[in-house]
Image (tube, rainbow, N blue to C red; front, side, top):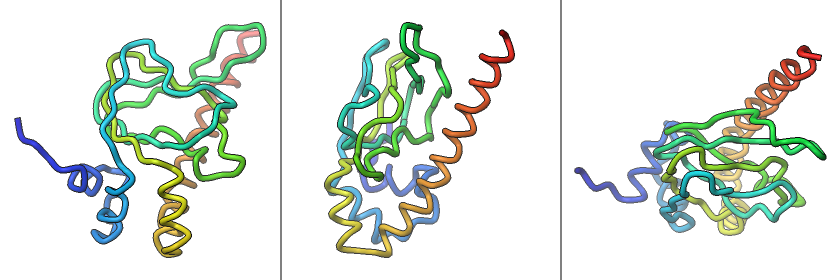
Length: 154
């Protein structure tokens, strides 16, 4: 099994494809390896959002929790995808919840650390904002499709 550094993993992740290598070096200072057991909630809606995750292995359900109903899965994320964007937008609270559907491995990036780096390096901040705006748009599209399916059944 080949061992890779966090910097190499970040630089090679699809989300950071074509990112200036100097930025990958900055990001690694905010990164750590994490694991989530099957069924474990990674975060819940309304909690403080201080991380985002580069999914390396496993499947993660992104859910919404309507009052008095079971959670609704609006998206399922796999290796190579990004989990979490709420760390970037005040008031820094999760707008969805996420649950490991099977054992998941990820790189966690600390949002507070990244916000500080983005304030110090506006080009890095702009680059991340462009990339995350695509993630937010994708989540909104996935949520819309799930809600259309849900209400079409009634």
